[in-house]
Length: 543
Image (cartoon, rainbow, N blue to C red):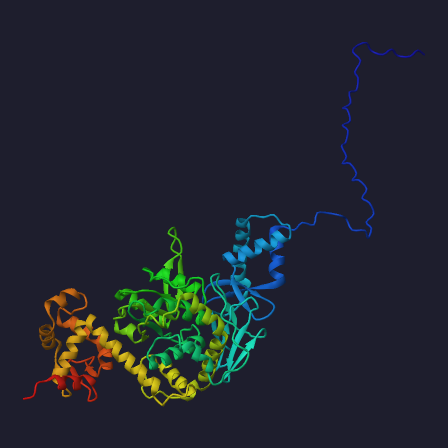
């Protein structure tokens, strides 16, 4: 049996696909077994870490909502705050970074501090900042910041003066321009003998000298607060009476030493607000006149005012600025003419200095350097003793500034003056100031004349009846010179007459005008004790 032959034809072969190679990840290199030995690496911190380390070691972040201000507060000693965004803060940070061999630009430091500003605003401690003077936690205690590098505070409590280097809770804000107050003597001076070294430099009448001492003590004990109204000091005197030197060498030295010194009156309220943020006491030199609009703003500076400005010209965000400060104005002629501002001022008249008594500024400065410790201690003693009895006295002749009237009663008891001595001097000071403002107030002058002609019985009538009588007493020239102050119709007279009620009341004239009624009669009369009645009777010719 034979094998079968295979059929002829093409041979078919089986084709197989090539097997693709599979890529595998390389195995990681074997890591060395960790040991306790530290790995050496670059330890240079970043800028943010370096600044954080510097700040956290010595200060903490805080935020004052009333001032909308972020600050750094030192951890050791009495709490002193500095604004985060300020030249002094950035310069100090740059210096300390340079000591750490950290090369960085000032612009980078400022940019980093801006981040801390927002951080303090959101997460910082909430504090209440005070400038120079603060009211402590309980009533009758005042804190004064000396402004020195040791962060020394003065405590006035229970009629005593205490020097505190630490432990005070009040947070004091310091600006870049602030300078330190004199260091008071450590020995107490309950008899106030140190004030004699100051009085011999003040060329004022005797009563005004004591009023000045009371004002100095008032400013040193009444902090900036909406609850307390500040009394402005107006220094008047002819050329050569030493107004500027008095402000520069005495008021600045014992109230608020500051790099700003004595300034010119700013034209804008915003400029005044900026100056108030850099200085506790504002001093404006050689003022000739004060515009009515600025006079209204100065009244707000006394009681504490707020105005709003736009943050940027590219958006509608508002920025609120609070402004309050004790104020000093000097000039040859009284620039304060508005009655509302007159009631917030104390007017002092510096006497001319003869050639024999005149001192050079160098000699004046040398005298104060030798006696400033005793003088400042005596001022603090006066402030502490008056503060201790302030709430126990009652003024007999209170003026509009009630807190200051009460303070004068306390000061006259501490200084051993007669009862009512400072009260009478202040009341006379206000009356004379109101009289001097009559020259710039033609309507008030005319109303005074109507009252004097009517006497104690007075004049009664409507505004339509009163306007022709007033126009007969004032010349056309005065009406043109004070066109916007003079009423030109009965309705305007009814509104403007109420602006002079307080001025005329201080001069012994009463004005009564009911707020409701069809006719709304106006009654103008002299008080029985009006001093102008005696003057008028003396000048009348005998019948």
